[in-house]
Length: 269
Ligand SMILES: CCCCCCCCCCCCCCCC(=O)OC[C@@H](O)COP(=O)(O)O
Image 1: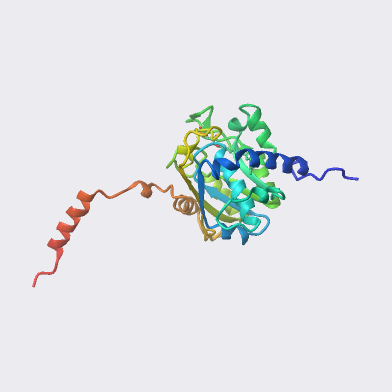
Image 2: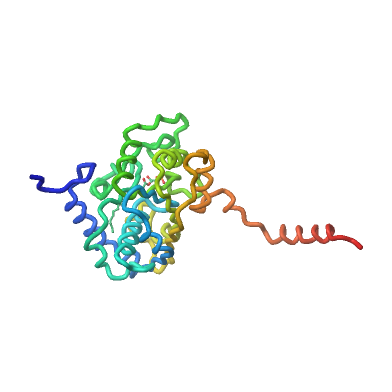
């Protein structure tokens, strides 16, 4: 007789459920109370299948981004529209949600180790270690890729394709390879205000009454057979609003100069 139901990673589901509930209660006020999370697009969550969904998001704090997603996904699944009002939604949380995290982040201390049980797929970043970029790239650990595959076939996976909390860093190719290989539905999320309201780790609150926003976009349109890795990378960069072109704001002087030039271009009768 099986006493406790486990997921493919061997995690006991009632333990996982209990941990999610504890962290949900501890953190709810950080998004509704001290701050008020503005959510858009929660109806998209309700249209998704139960497995093979990949959420891609920009990244602002180590832990608070994922915690917000757990709140928003569960609230939406239990019928709330663009709100995490009334924490009752956590009574029956979705248990097959996973997130990709840097191994070094999740092994630094007791709390991250506990959070692992909630659904971490830890990966070794090939280009970064001990808080520094490494020039000599390491090989992708095949176990990491295998675990992402298992997680996608069991449920939903959250990933931060830039692999770092620094904004406008390039999207890493690994995410595009995973998309091409496993063909998940890819749902972009754009968050903001997290870095202002939380510290870098997202464990302590820095400031109250900050506008935190959380926008869920419709699934990306991807041609899994014909899109190249670079094309998928670019689609991701635009979707999570981290493409370099988002940095370009045209100064007013330049706009005026362009107008003057356009006058010269006008057809002369
Ligand atoms: C409803 C509440 C349920 C509670 C759910 C618990 C969720 C656990 C949240 C843990 C999320 C950890 C995600 C870590 C992602 C990650 O790996 O961040 C990358 C950093 O290393 C960045 O390093 P850096 O290069 O220094 O910016």
